[in-house]
Every structure is written in C-alpha cells, then in structure tokens.
Length: 153
Image 1 (cartoon, helix red, strand yellow):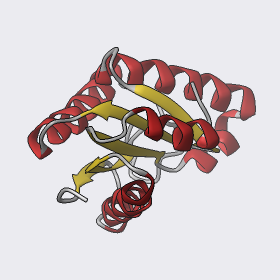
Image 2: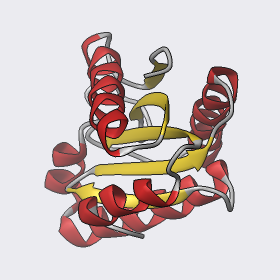
Image 3: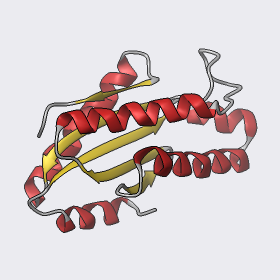
C-alpha cells in the first residue's frame, strides 16, 4: 500500500487515461481506538486495507494517506463504473460486519467514501482530489456511513 507521495507519483502513470479516485475515511476511528486500544485499531486498519483490495479488485492501487484515511486509484471509463466501485465497497463492508463497540449510532464499523473521475494529468489530479474530498465531507455532514461521487472532474 502506497502513501500520499506515491499517490501523486502514480497519477503520472495514468497520464491521458480516465481514472477514478476514491477517498475513504473510517467513521469514529478515534472512538474505536479509545475503546479497544491502538493494537486493535492497527488490526482494523489491516482488515480494511484487505477489504479495499477485495472490493475494488486487482486493478486498484491502494494508499494510506494517514490516520484513518485511505485512497484508491483505478481505471474508470465512466461515472457509472466509479459508482459501482463505491457500491461494491459499501456492500463488502456491510458483509464483513466489523464490530465497533464505541460507535455513537450503535453500528458496526462504517466508512465515509468520496469519489471523482478524471482524465489524469498534473492539473486535473488536484481538482479531482478536491472534488472527491468534498464528496466525502458531504457524506460526513449527512451522517456518515455512505458514499458519494461527484461529476467528472
């Protein structure tokens, strides 16, 4: 799994191609760590990294941006394809039923997910990242535990 720097470098490998950027934030991760301890938090991060890989498939390149944030880059010819990736991620997480004993809404582990599709180049990546981040925060504002995709950047 790459880091933030690798994410920026890898966009160049997709130059001129339509790709999807998915940003993922674990809802109430601080509460999870506070309730179960950092070793369990680290275990959850590993489980979620595996889940991201399974849900998004072999074509996805995964990144840990820091703390409880992940990202994925993947070939994505249409906005519908990006929507399908986000839905698959949500379905896979719900099926996994990772327990979260400190979730304020008494739910299992949930994610806030934002996505954007763009044609890769140095300038479009910054706009796509901002669009995906805005979509993610719209999910958080609406109560978390969901996904949103913005129109092509």
